[in-house]
Structures are given as C-alpha cells and as structure tokens.
Length: 145
Image (tube, rainbow, N blue to C red; front, top):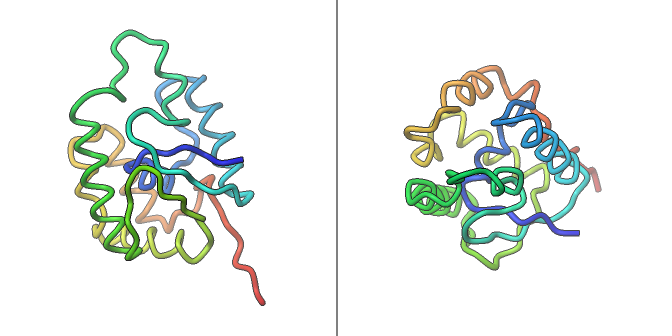
C-alpha cells in the first residue's frame, strides 16, 4: 500500500513521538508511523492526507487553512532542496534510512524548519531533534548489501 502525505508532514514524521491533537489522531498516526517504518512508500498529495484523516470530521479542520497550504509550500521547497528531488503532488518517495537520516540532519540544524514557523508543536519537535530523535516512532533500519 501507499501512504498519502502532504509536504509538511514529511517534516512532522521526523519527530513524531506519539503525541497529537486527539487520541484518534494519535492512534491513526501510530499506524502510519508503523507502516512507514515497515517500508511503505509515500505519495505526495495536495491538501488533507492520511495523517489529517481523523481531523476532517471536526468543525473547521485546520488542515484546510491557507496557513497549512503555505506550510506545505515551504516544506516542499526545503525538502526538495535537501533531497534534490521535486516535492510536489503526484511524486512517490521511498523514505529509506538514508533519506530519513538526511532529513533529520537538515531538521536538526534548522535547514528545513521554515515551514515550522508558528506551529504549536515546534518547541517539542526542536527538543526531540536536540535529543537525537531518540523516541521517534518512524524508524528505518539501514540495509547492508
């Protein structure tokens, strides 16, 4: 199967430790983190994605706000620069151990955090990065050939 993600969630998954907006959101994200760790690929989408799904039934879900669309735009640009890949709807991405490490390194030095401005989780994510991403749920083992 394939996991549908919007661009800024490529950053969120780097520091996800099991905290979220609601219990349903966290349960859903835990499942997605497990699937990503198991090697499922990502299909980049525009707008609400598989992570947003539990929020869509609520009144005025923030995932449809213009500020979130701008967050996607900034994340796509910065992640694309780090990976030297187009980060746009329709692109498929295999989040292997090397890509995950490159993104986490860039995140830890602030190279891909422009999209995080004004995010309520930014301080937590910064602390997780400063701690070496130790408790994160998305993990990919390095495969030796």
